[in-house]
Image (cartoon, rainbow, N blue to C red; front, side, top):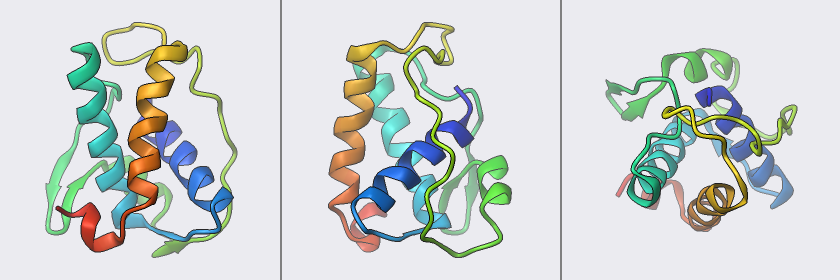
Length: 117
């Protein structure tokens, strides 16, 4: 799965909850979801690699896609994650999607400062 697809999924969740999200926080959440997915399945979720940037892990393609705005307030085109493939080329099914949703639900309830911890 491309990190940009996961970023769109994250942004839509925030918009649905009447929340704004900063570009830098998207990367922290992608990183957190990727770790939880790896822990639960033994496979990485996203195909992209993280880079170590000043404010935490970053996927350059995602940063560039959303670099037009520090704060994102509008929904992005939502591609369903069901049927996508993780880095191990396994299809993301209902169980895998639930791992992603649980991790994201926890992140949505955190402040930007808590995301960094």
